[in-house]
Structure formats: structure tokens, C-alpha cells
Image (cartoon, rainbow, N blue to C red):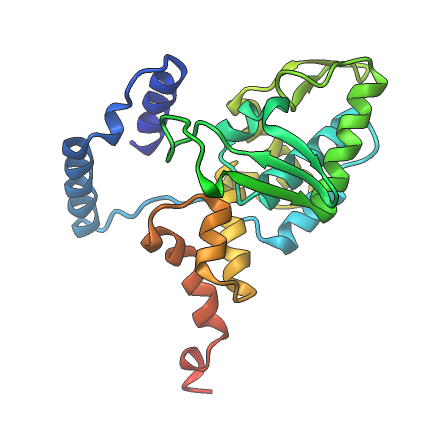
Amino acid sequence: MALRLAALARLHRDRKQPCPTHDQAVRALLAKLRKAHAKDGVTENKKAALDAARMGRLLATCDATPQGVRDRALLAFGFATGGRRRSEIADAAFAQLASASDGYRFRLGHSKTNQSGKARPDDAKPVVGEAARALGAWLELLDDQGIAREGKIFRRVLKGGHIAGPLTPAAVRLIVQRRCAAAGLDEGEFSAHSLRAGFLTEAGKRGMPINEAMAMSGHTSVATAVGYMRTEELARSGVARLLD
């Protein structure tokens, strides 16, 4: 059901139409359905999180080929900017990207939680450190092939290493899963959403303030963010080891 709803929401976003899945009546109905499924013992099939350790394994599979450079930049960008959704990665455009003394700044526009695309204080996402280096290498590759820095940032790579048109959200998911398989992970357990889950999971492991993590991820629901972060915090806490 979640996949069908996501597809429906994407279709309406692409057509610049109000999304019915955000209607309060629809949300209330879905909440009742989830409760009914929970009573029957049916739980949501969530994909595993790509935390920093797993991300390191994925990035290690990215070589110096155009595809490897592209994938490294895409994965690092998607994770480091708050765990961006696959649609946000595919839609990321040069018009949203600006250079900074420590890397880049990416201004998030239209998204699941910002249907109007209006500018908000937390929309500017820093791209620094490893993510900035990976993105810079991809931009240099675009320059080398004579591709102007306009339109979408992440592009298809054809046979022979030639860079072509923009990626689709589905292509972003396949890139994540292919890199998981190359890293020795079960690709069926991961999806593009694993970047988003992994960002908050890692923030929880490192004890990052929830308000800072949410400012990066763009989550508007504290409960959702806490669901990822709190589990890792509790795992490190003494309350989880009262029998030890």
C-alpha cells in the first residue's frame, strides 16, 4: 500500500496538482488501516538503514570510472544533506547549488513536506567534507565532458562513460541497491529510503541534538525522527543493560 501511495503522490507532484495523500481525511483513514493491520499482527516492512559504517562500505565500491564517480557523489550527497528522498536526489538542480568556502550549499525546494516549494530557513543544506569532495569530483567530470552546469546535477552514465540526461527516482533506488550488492549487503533489505533512515540512525548513535538532525533531514514529525534516533540512544544507555 505504501508503494502505491508513494506512486500516487509522485504523479500529482509531477503534474503540479494537490496531493490527495496529504488530505486530512485520507490520513485519518490510513491511520485506521494501520491500526487494524497492527491488531492483526501485520507490521510495516521497513527497509534497513544505511548508517555511516554501511555507507563507508558502499562508497568503497565506487571506483574512478564515470559511473563510480557519479555514484559516490550521489550517495554522499544524499546521505550528508540529511538523508534526501530519491525524488529529491533525482530533482536536485544546479540552480539549487551554490559554492561555499567549505564546500557547497544546496537549497532544498519542492519536497514531500514542502508542497508549495516556498523558501524556508532550514532549506539550505551544507555539503561539506567527504560529501563536498565527492560532489566536486563529479562536477569536474561534467566539466571535462563539456557538460554545462545547468539542469539536473545527477545524470545517466552510458556505455563508454559518456554522460547523458538526468536520472529518474527509480534509477536512484537501483543505484543504491546495486552498490549495496557490490558491498556484500543484501540489496533486498535496502532502498533509497535507507539513506534517510541511515542519516537519522547515525545521528542517534552519535547523540546529535534532535532539533539539529531534523533541521537537516526536514522531518516535521518529532515522533518519526525519534523513532530512528531514540532506539540507538537507548541501545547505548545503561537502561538497556540492567541485567548485565
